[in-house]
Length: 317
Image (tube, rainbow, N blue to C red):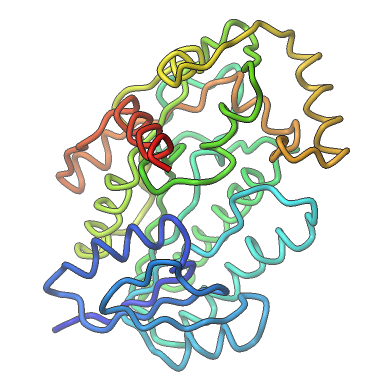
């Protein structure tokens, strides 16, 4: 029997890539795309509904559509200065979405968490498995809220044994379609500042590999937590070299001060507060053995190939 899927954040980056892949699946029936904004490139076969996650209409749409599967991707990724609004959308909006899924009779939920929920700490092992404690950085709002929601997902799954819950924890997602602060930061300034020579490992993953894993999870109705990242990693110094960017060493305290001031003065080139700095300095590389074994999944792209795909698309634009 064909399954009805509802995707929140359907007009977003990951939502668009996922829809492109899942539309090709023979077991998929009706697809509803829910988002606050219209998609710039609508996917054929998707019925789009436009709505704000902060409204009661959002809940009503999910309940009335009665999807078999809900894929929740409606989050604010790019940091914003309205921290209250960001929390309302990311945390409260997610909780309301899950409750609406329950009311609507959803049998399976796939939600995007983030590897940032592990936190970036000097004592992090390389790599981090799914069993590693969630220790999000206390001052980086995105990672902190992802970590907070992890507890909610676990409790929701325990309280609702008729609903399968799968959680993905991707690292930095790159590819030809990416255009966010994480893809722009290495081009923000004429010279990229490097703390400790930029030798901390940074793990990337290609957008297509993320989408293919998501499709595999919903097709198999898998439950539990899955790390997503390429099987290798790069250092920031290597990323800058591959992007042909000039670099210069800078002490952490000075870079922290510079980023803080630029964020406070709303300088256009500074798209994130200084609270992200530890995620550049300390490791948060994840193990992908579980996704390979349980999903029988083979990655098509390395971290370097994900980076090169992003750079090639940027050079064309």
